[in-house]
Every structure is written in structure tokens, then in C-alpha cells.
Image 1 (cartoon, rainbow over the protein chains, first blue to last red):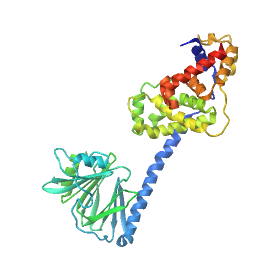
Image 2 (image 1 turned 135 degrees about the horizontal axis):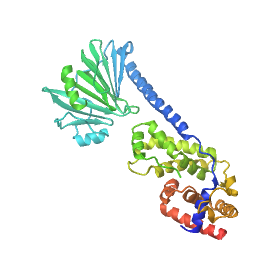
Image 3 (image 1 turned 90 degrees about the vertical axis):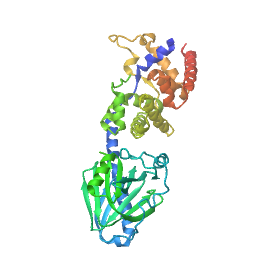
Image 4 (image 1 turned 60 degrees about the vertical axis):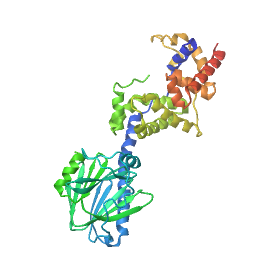
Length: 231
Length: 182
């Protein structure tokens, strides 16, 4: 360093700077406000969309009896089911893909039970699905991630039982009567909705991922399978 | 200069997981250098405060993209400096750097630093006046480099220019100062 540079360093120590304001308090206050605002905005957006879909179905318009929101899923129990057909469990999920391509399309990796290696996967941005075999029966596993990039919702008739289960951060077990499943892809943009009748379903939220298992299994079989995916 | 917390990488990791208390510790550690960097660029205390505050909030939002193990300070100062530059574009009073009142007449009690012994009060005033008369981009580089003690790399990051540009601006500024200072 030259003499001039030393002189500049010395000069720096003699300069008058305004006192540093308390930025910790100001920044902390703004972060807290953001923390509360974002989930509130999302919750309101999800509720509005869910209600809009519900109200678009005439039979459901009259009586929404119960309402659950779980991660990327919304469950509503209505008096009268909207029209829906029995369709294959992968209906509307798009073409079958190899795992690598599906994970790329979904933008996250799927979690599978240990020792299970399905060959076909289905994906949308924020959602990935595959069909497993458990106790000799096909079971659809779907995993959803993100701020409702993909939203799916259900209508359950009063005959369908909806029970909370101790799984992940929060779980629901739906069984009994038929219920209608509606997938809504590209939330907030193109509202493509796929509808079909669904079987027994276990839904749970774990570390930001919403998991869904659907198949002709009972509660204990479904919980055992779920336990192999997340604990 | 500002001391670094011993467990900075741990604080960053915690902040990346959403721990606002960890981030507050980072703000506490870097608020001084962030505010002064913004002040050197904006030359207005209110703009500097706003730029530093907005910079910290934007850095929080961008923490997910921060590469673990990378130095935090240049990354943060780049965001803060960008906020300060945006405010320079708006109209407003810009202050010149000035000496502290006490620095004009050093007290006989305090032992001067070796560097301070190089200059008399008159020389300090003359040198600062010469710095204030430099073209803005040269003055900013010199101020960040020598007055605030930023490394060349940090200056380059803060001003969003290549390190070679920092070197050349520094060289030109020193050359001009030598002409007026000698």
C-alpha cells in the first residue's frame, strides 16, 4: 500500500457518518408482517377457489356441510354429490412417464415405499403420481408440493366417513360411501378439472408435501403402506 | 470494521430454514457496514437507511438462492448497494463526505494511529476535498475500498462491475489525487 493509500485509510477513520439506525428492529418487524400475510393470502385464495368450484356444481351449491383443508387438498362434505363417473384411477393424470421424466415435469422427487419400483409415473407441475400394488390391489399414490400449483379437492357424501388420523403433520381417512374427486391443474391459470368417483383415500401432510393414497384397502393396510413412505 | 459472528454459516443455514432470530443476528452483525455502504453511494442518510432496510428484507427473501459456504458479506452488500443506486436515480440532496468535528483538531490525549500521523488536520481536509471532487464513480470506488475497508472483490460485487473495472477506477482516482495532493 502506498503512502497515499495509507492516508486514505486514515482519513476513513476520521469521517463523519450518520449514526447507524437500528435496522434489526425495522427488518424484524417487516419479516414478521410478511410471515403472517403470505399464509393468509394463500388461505384466502384457496378458500375462494374451492368455494368457486363448489358453487359451480349445482347439487353442491345448496349445502356444504363440512370443509377441510390439508396442504394441497381440500375436502368438502356435501348433501348431494355432483355427477361423476367410475373411471380408471389414473384418468386425467396425463401420459405415463418414466420416473426421471416425471420428476422433471413435477419439479420434485417422489418418495416411494422401500423396495417398491413402479415403472410408470404421471406428472403435472407440482404433482407426481404412480400406481403401487399392495396386498395384491392397485393403489394410486400421489404427492403434491408447492403453493397449490396443483389443487385437488373432494366432495364426500354424508355416507362417507372422514376421520382424522395420526400421520405426518395431519392426516385424514375417507372411506365408506362413494365420493367425487376433482383434480384441478395449473392453479390460477388454466382451470382444467378432471372428475371421477374415488375409493378409500388416505390423505396426509408431511414436511410440505401432501400425500394421497387411493385404493381398495382398509384403514390399517393403508396406514401401513403410508408408514413405509413417511414416518 | 464490523466483526463477523463466529457461527455465521450456522446462522445462515438456520435463516434459510426460516429462523428469523438467526437472521436478526446477521442483520445485527452487518447493519453498520450495510448502512455505510448505502450512505457512500446514496450520500443521504434517509435514503441509506431505506436502502439498507430494503436490502436486508430482499436478502431474506433471496436466502434460498444463497450458495452455502460462499461469503455472505459481499452477497449482502451487492443487494444493499443496488437498492442505494436505485435511490440515487431519484432527486434529492446529496451530502459530501465530511470530517468529524473532533477529527479536525486531534486531541493531545489520544494516541494517533500510525496512519493518522501521516497527515496534519490541514492535509486531511485537503485530501478529503480532493476526494469529494473526483468523478462520482471514482469517488465511490475509493470510498468503499479505503474508507469502509471493502476488498476489491466486495467493491466489484457492490457496484456490479468486474474486478478489473474496480482496479482501473482505483488507479485513475489515485492518480488524480496524487496530482492534487502532491
